[in-house]
Amino acid sequence: MELLKECSTATLSDDEQFAMLRQVIDDYERRESNLIQILHMAQAIFGFLPEDVLHFIGTEMDLPMSRIHGVVSFYSYFTTLPRGRHSVQVCLGTACYVRGGKKVLDSLKSEIGIDVGQTTADRRFTLEVKRCIGSCSLAPAVMIDKTVHKRVNPNKLQEILKLYE
Ligand code: FES
Image: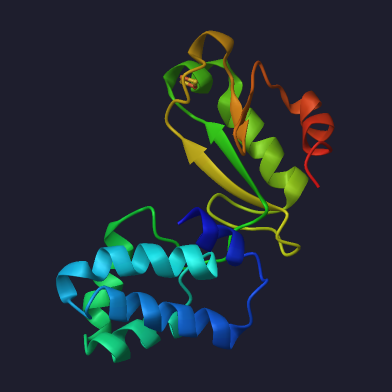
């Protein structure tokens, strides 16, 4: 899986990515009971699950698109939109919310020009919201990739974002 994640960073051509996906589908014997695993692998290969990839899986596995869309939309792990190089997760759990998390989120939205769930056009950031990231005593907290930034306030944001190109 890790290897596939590295491969997904655009080092493979489209044809190579689809050939790899076909191999995955073969390895899972085209069984509907393996659809979730196949979708996981597809997301590892492509980085997300665009419509043409879902269509490919449907055709190869002889499954209706409604079945595939149903699974993809049920699990929040799956994403049909491209993700940014950096994942920005603003905590809006109770402690963070009451200590200004919402203001931080609003400032972030205007700073990077996107809404929650979106990715910047340059694929630099994807903006998300979390319910608690385990740093309640140092709220409000924002996690960028694997780093938790604590006691964040809107004035600190520019400085923090500069760390992530
Ligand atoms: S509520 Fe934000 S870290 Fe716990």
